[in-house]
Image (cartoon, rainbow, N blue to C red; front, side, top):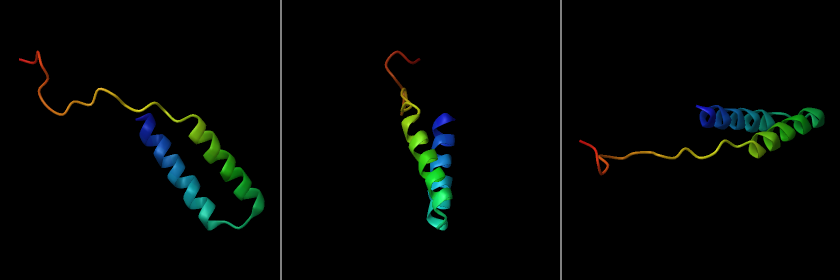
Length: 56
């Protein structure tokens, strides 16, 4: 769930960045993108694609 929110935040900030020409707003958005990238949640592990040894 954290990864989804992270990706949605980045998409929103990038969209807004592409739509504005205001220097102050662009600076704020670039800071938000940088912060979001710095706090990237760890990749999800443990994805199972089928029966695993020991499953019964």
